[in-house]
Amino acid sequence: MPATTTIEVIDTAVKIGLGGAITLIGTLLVTKLNHSHDHSKEKGKRHYDALESVGADVEEITHVSLRYWALIIEWVRNHSQGLDLTDKRKEELEKTKDDLFDSFKSLTVAESKLLLLGLDEPAKLLRAYGEYLKSMRRNCYYEKESLTEQTMNEVREELLKKREVLFSSLSAVYKSGL
Image 1: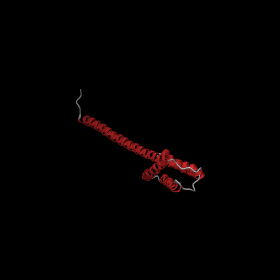
Image 2: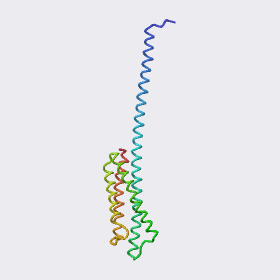
Image 3: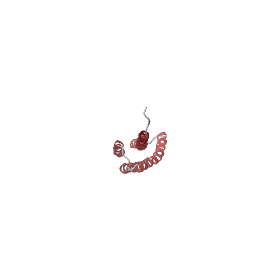
Image 4: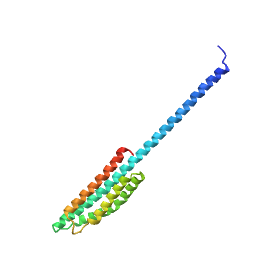
């Protein structure tokens, strides 16, 4: 067996060192890519979660608004026949008015999420939707003599149209993943 020369020892050491360095660099690159991917994935999840939360907030206030609308149109129909709401329905109307008022906080929070995400157009549509609901509440109320069933139906149609436009905008953002 021949004796190992200094050059062979150095050659082996360089090969081992080079292999270790390549392994280390590869490990660092893979770790960095995985971290970047995980960060991107988490950011996307937070984005989708925020949009879903906004959608839920909009649906909650829509539900309360339509319940309010239903109670007011019930009064309009009764009033046209010379009747009033029952005491139970009046209590329900008062509770619904309070719920509607309280729901505006969720709408404000939803708008702030959209603005935080840089989604100005959906935020503007959400604000317009909220303004419409506020207008509905101020102009369509219990014992307003000039209210008609036709007016109330137009209010409901406009409410649903504004909701649809808002959700179309949110859906476009959701699908694009921005």
